[in-house]
Image (tube, rainbow, N blue to C red; front, side, top):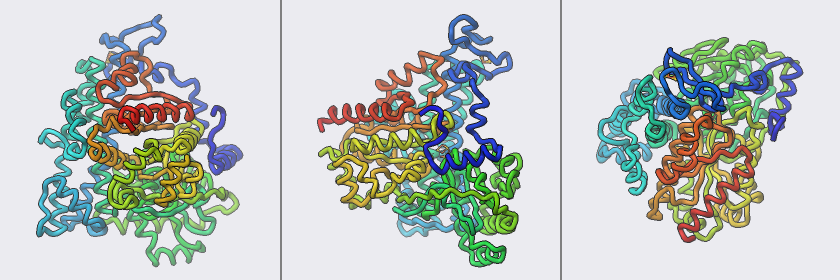
Length: 620
Ligand code: CUV
Ligand code: SF4
């Protein structure tokens, strides 16, 4: 859908407010960047040493080699590997922070968090070979946190969670030499290999990219998910509301945006404080309205049903409502534009992580050891700011669509009565044709939510169960697809299953790191059937992706054996060798492979064709 900014009515209304007020958003800056650099789009520029920068002429008239002699194939492959490394690093560093918090809690150094899911703690401990018999929760947690932190630099051969995958998958990774070893090691090795004069073989570079991404999907991201569940509770189905209409005209509005639930969970706690609520009332507000955005929004909506104000492209629009007393951020997916924009309003832009500072932000360092007090201080600042709100400049769209989220692996199993068998039966008798995972961001290159919503609708209409995370899931929430009632948009078979279980046809499984939940289900399904993950009638897609994390995700999903359709074009088309590796040869190597399709209806067809091919091969 060309020429339209968004399909989301709330976003469209806010964009009009922005235009009328002369305020700039990512959409405007995207237009101002046109035409974007053709070398960059194709992945053909290199800045890896100071003999450069170099760029390769895609039309063959100009230079075909960098100063060092690197060809377009080498440059494209190196650049892609660096994107994967950056994405894997982001997810994994987030994972480490969660584990460090659990260790601090177990050691009694961090007092404001408790261990919410002891069963999961024990199950993970057993997975790591830690005995739980007669041990206190504290001791188990300490040992488990140590063992998990070891995973970042482990020398034991491969990561613990690899034992979740079917034996056939392990054999493939072993044969290709891409078994992920330590989490940090793969990122470091990626940086080493892409340093001047090291790895200059495109295939060798890409294979390491797969290994590095696997250390994210089965390592850093997975640990982020599992340890968040231990500390903050494993999500169960919960109802909430989504879109900018969740902001309140009367209450102190606090938007929390970013990724690590360590901050957002404490804000959820602090926002309940009766003292703070009366302080808000004393300032003339009706109370405190905490809402989320992007993945940190997903974390608290999954566990508490906290309203989610929107997905990636709505962060600026939320400020433009004029109704935010504070935007509180930690790390990842936070636009540096927010500082300047917030300054046009009374809104305080508060950064909290020593890793992530922004122009125009007030920095309130969030210290886990003093978590509740820091969260209270942040909320106090927002309350203080309420009288500064200019009521004449407030515009809050009405949209606030209901959703049901919270579909962790445990929640899915419990909806199914404890085992995956009913799901397998439904797939065998074709009530469910297959499963598609739709994940990832928004991107101003795509009409906001257009690809996400249309792909989800096209797939459920053909009896494909859709599972989602990240900003894709928020798009579906806003479109009303995360409700059991949305079963009426599903094909007859899927609708019947949804009605019988009382679940929506699109299941929200969490934040981006929670794609590890999807991997875990896929691995369990394959084991149950005695096949490889690549044999399953499942597929993945990132219909509107933009971040390097999404590149790492795409790579580990493909490396795990799953066909993946990208809805925005990755910067690899400057190399036929690399494009061919990713879209064709990968199929023979790892079972999974990429396709690029920017039209959501055609992308859905690709997924359906793939699912049907896998069904036929399984004889079902
Ligand atoms: Ni981590 S990575 S824009 S918040 S999904 Fe949303 Fe999800 Fe992409 Fe970022
Ligand atoms: Fe140019 Fe080679 Fe240096 Fe890259 S590594 S900037 S291609 S000389």
